Image (cartoon, rainbow, N blue to C red; front, side, top):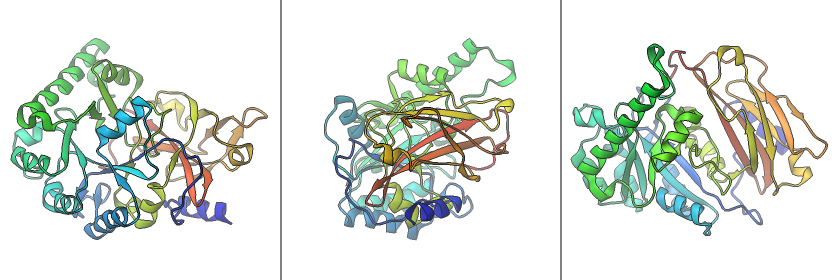
Length: 363
């Protein structure tokens, strides 16, 4: 019955809404939440209503969750140190004005730390929809840290106008370094309290971009969903977007309870695919930590396509292949795979897909 409920909710764009419960021997992990706009219904795909956001913060405060700074979670993962179960980080992309006006007062009242990824040019140009440096300095005194989101929030995976790989890489490095320089000049030590953090604009990345950011000393985040743990790729860490129909309390309670699915390899590792690879084929290998009975309950879902067929590739059911049944019309899509973990919780893995050149369909 529980699998049927999960299927119905995911087909409807909802995640399982079962009560939070502890799972024995949970892996060291944390859940990172992603927000953009607060109380701005003009942009439904990137906005969360304030009653929803208020309820989410109250839920964290009332149910024993540990809200940690993002840098602290990364340091603990790198060092192999204990992270308590039910640890959450709050991140916000783009530095919209509603962060200061609507979200910040609530976060400050709860004494919750949070990280804002800033695309710096619009702040420098005093864009009406964005925070000011002075507002960010105030927020930094009360729990906020600020991190790199490039200068101009471009689609970094695109190579416009036949641009060479060398010219593309030079431009990206310039944009990332200039954004970091502006953050440092305006906010100083308030930019990071630990490792350098970076969020890919639109959550878009490819292996060349990952290698570049790694060499520049960054830990980087996408917008695919899932919990992070010891096996997670530090150059493409997942975050759960909380906006629109994905920001309901049912979704929220489910996602902050998730665990990282123990994936040891994913093929392809490049989320950028060609038009001829639509729908794409994904092959995953699962590591230790799941019983055969748990693996047999694995289900995968495609963006706006519901449940997808899964083909096991070995008798032990540790390798499988999944492919959507029809092409995706938008620039970005995802495959999400889940396994019940007991107590109403789920192991979760998400793989993003990107088709450069396709028009934007949302925020």
